[in-house]
Length: 122
Image: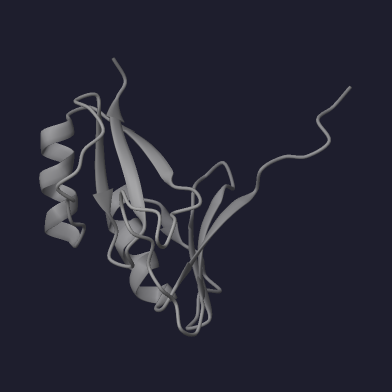
């Protein structure tokens, strides 16, 4: 039986879709979606999976690790070297919160305030 559904996109709320798309484009090397605009922007890979960013008026960023404004979900990325990836992503505009869950995962915050995780393949 073929799958009922295939994941085609993940969309994050934010205040500035184009700025957040630019951050993830530089961080991942994915292509900017050609129909990106001020209301919705995205980056896509060759496999067709889109990471989208939609403008939400009055957007409030989640708080890590607190739950006053919960994150609800986050993105995980695999990297070769945690320290080097962290340095490059901070140079692109990410921040590193003080609280880190353990040494195998590194939590960073994107420019719109969304937590995302890095881990190594090993």
